[in-house]
Length: 416
Ligand code: EPU
Image (cartoon, rainbow, N blue to C red):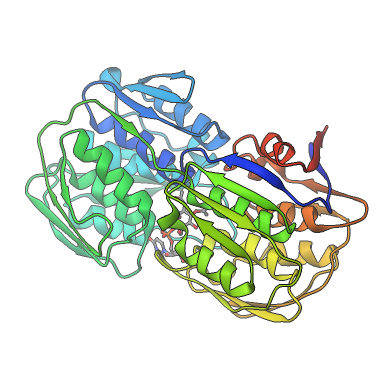
């Protein structure tokens, strides 16, 4: 079992350049199959989720190849093959194949998705959307079968604001007959990114990034070239690491506007944060104030940064309350942080974090962001080496993590 070894206590210093966004990448890849010629995606991250998606598209008959940071997807040979099992189970975002294959072929059979299962993550809103577009959805031995004789545009009100369901409905509706209106849509930057790609492929989508998205279905879509947005969660994780280690780090190649909720919270704690056009500099301080954090849908504080933020809040001199209003129980990192000496109590949707020093321990990442939380915590530990297992989760979303951390002066290595 591979372990990440971290000897903490060193302030991170230097520059880190952020790759393309994981949660965009794994939606842009399936979106490409709606085109009838080659789609080229620039600035894609080299992470395991992207590799798995690449293999899924190859299974469907696409030709997919890397040229450095650019992935070319040629969907000319694609077929609608049922995928009840296999790789689809490795990835939560395999659910985007439902919308994309439905849009392209009017049918799809996809095994229920896997991924970071930190709590039950239903897909009822995705299904509600497909049904509204005229599809019949059945559950066949754990795989979802979706079939429509003709996809017709519809007005769909989302009962829950969902990133995945909003994107999935956009994918299916892009080639449906007539107009679709998605109300109470999610507004995350990744949604705008997917709409931008689809429009470059010939779709007619307006309003992405607001709560009402209008889609005028088109008959055909074509290839194009698209550059993915930077990963705001990866960027946020490095901002948190810089603050936690009392370092001085320039986080480069980002969209500072995407970081506003985190920037404001860090400043409230007493961290110095300087925004530039495409970068943010975070200068840590010795003393931090306790703050309360509420994870909400965008543009609120991102739930994906809630776990790393928990670790940073252990570095304050008071008691902070961190609540997650997106997921009801995303706190699997808390017992692991407790092994490192953290004083944290979970009550309902909130973690109550008391400031205090952490110590080295053997801990396990139970999902991607829980893993990020453990790395942040380990970097603050002044004596000894922290051993983190469960690296398969961390590798899903952080490109070249150790290389970046070493570049910033951290003492980090991997052991078999
Ligand atoms: N929900 C439903 N029904 C649905 C869909 C969602 O009740 O049909 C609920 C969920 O249970 C959750 C809330 O709605 O409580 C929001 O879920 P959402 O659908 O927005 O999440 P997602 O699309 O499955 C994406 C990211 C997550 C990120 C969330 C929220 C991908 C593949 N995943 O998930 O990223 O936490 O949006 O921003 O894009 C991560 O990167 O570590 C990660 C988990």
